[in-house]
Length: 465
Image (cartoon, rainbow, N blue to C red):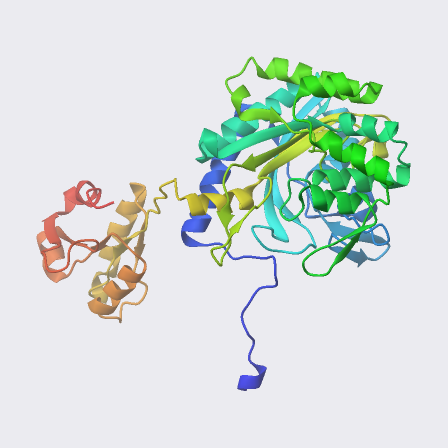
């Protein structure tokens, strides 16, 4: 193949290979997350990567003229299919399809990859792992949402974050819905208003960015223009004044719309249940949280870090929420024709991984294998006997796979693999029923080899691993 025609190895933007320490840490986080999900009584569910497009819809896009612009969709004959962009929409389809076989309150968890056709960067990926818990069916909202908040707190602490490193922000979408009703904002503008409010704490927005989105349009640093909600000045001013309120009591006194009052009361009931747990100090109100996804209609939660992470160039960035979710009452009724309420939360596993790699607060021990060197091919059976003994005793181990290579090359390979110890046995060892070990992590220049009786293999090798 000519140089011109050779392929250049690489990945499209928003996708990432993970290996070595990063992958080991991710696996550890997933293990902790799944253990906590099970501890809280959730059952596992796995759904396919693809769903029929019309079944899961598109609740992400901000471009009304192209509702599927933020997802990966393909024509599959008579139907269009879409790679799942979250785990809640497939859950709604599953519950509608299997409702008769499920308990009246269905608690499920799912840990799978999702796909979004959006701009990548700063721990934002186009393929990433989500870990979701949802409660669907008959439940007391205050108790169910308190369970989710406690689960978030306990899981993040078990994953290695410290209490002062994150805060769980909660609100209720009904609060904003009532204010929108009082301001007589037309239905076609409401979702734009919700999404504008939700961006207040996002990087590069603030009050000015929200104001631009509430008015005609917002132009970002790249020159891209996002159409606004086209509210009048009085409507914009009243929304911005609302966003400055931080206290639940002040909110209750100043906003009397029945829907707003209902949302406020639900928050009060939630805080009462939360007061029974040890995590209440991790949770606070933030009325700007309404969640960008259109199907939320009550309780909302976003978990944010109390510090800045750094991107690949060493620049501090705000990566956004590492765990979010909320309550929805209409998502399943699209299929069933009757309202089946649900509430849930989702941990952005790869965002959490991005942060934990930088904090380096968890010691990751990768148990590299013991290497069994092949000194003489005629003793291959003996080397495999040693290998089997190691593996039967749960010791990671491998045999060098090319008996024609000399010992020096075998040890070079072992050092590159970061193997802790090498088994080196030749004719003398097998004749005397002995084993020789070489400590590959020892100090150069010192005697790093020991010999001992074959029956002591496991005890001796455990000293090095």
